[in-house]
Length: 238
Length: 313
Image (tube, rainbow over all chains, first blue to last red; front, side):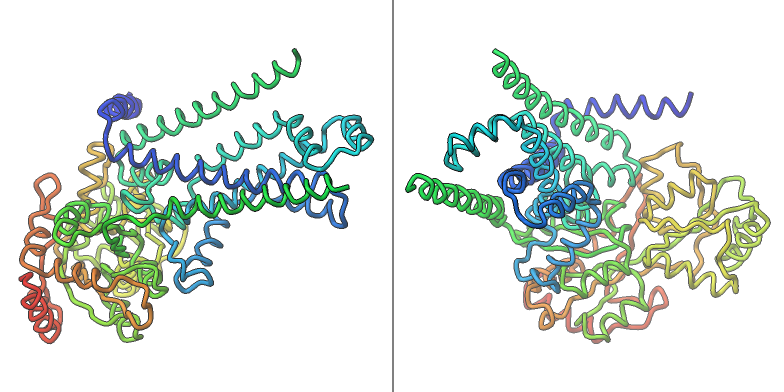
């Protein structure tokens, strides 16, 4: 079959490209990793504390805040891309920062996507902790820092899940980083935007090679985090 | 309870550290790249054919710069540039280029090169467009389309190619609409691929079509049906942007890019760029009359003196 030949040949050439250790492909991969890891860590740096506070503090409008964060978990990347573009454009309110079409703009856009994911999952995992634990902490009149440490430690599994989900969303995302990164060669070209470009240009072998790398990264990071999950589960049961 | 107060403070300190670390992290990765970056807003054809990849090492070397480009349709490229988000324009839609300059967004426009458009379609050519002139081909495609025997795939992205397509429909006196008329809203290469999948007709600049043919080989079944018509000529211009309006743009490097492109070296680099042994772009700086365009003598004289004073000739 002619059609299958194209795909098979694409895979064969993709493997060749991967084994040749092409400098350009390495750059693209490193940029993708740098942007998505930074976005995930920043999203977690804000998402976990805020999620914890929302889950623990009783305040008016808490359910509204929770609903809004849960809704934002499904934020469409292209909308984020559009809004970040308009803000960072030289004619926009933050144009003086000159961040449009830079990796930093990509990190900002992806952070807006990862924050609600981490925040939402943190809220639900802290809320679902055994209520007796919270009662005990209250009866011991534990200081807030201690309380936070105990509760966050108990919801570790949920927090790791949150980070896996956020990283998965970031590394596979294309709409937002295309709009604010511009897919500039050697500067803001990431794995996903490069796959789009090479597919458009009909260079399917390179596109497949990048797709394989993307899958391997997602697999590797998940493997690592799952290992952490398993370890914390084992430790808890022993 | 002092311990409670202490821990509140410690929580605040932790939060502050996290926020500062986050900001530092952003600025850490924000360390400016050593070479100056030039952002060219250009059309998909100059990027997809590989012309800019071909020119980049020479330009970067000469000016210690890092040449990058946003490949958009001409309409989008002009829009991005008018917002000040790019440093220089390399586009192909004469009418809108002139409007852009006269509206005060651009300060100087000069024709640097040209190629031509071709009408491509399925090899069995159900509309009978092969070998006709462009206007006649459009009439026949529309007629076959209305009869349900052909499809036309349009860029639909406000690009220079779409502007030319609209002019051809107008010349042909055809209103292009109906189920036979498909609009992709994407760049040239994806549009050709859609036409290929659907066995439809489309208009492409010659460069993009042959480049795609060289990468897709036999999987691209479309063939050139209509070419070498003066109404299909495709001149490209470089436009310098108004730096008073957008003081942040890198106008020195933009000027250097323009001078590089019109210098003897730049023009010959454009001329000797080939794909599968075929020349895709033809240098035409200083002589737009040769392809039936109005003379640009005043601009050319000015640029030549600039080239001389910078020793770039």
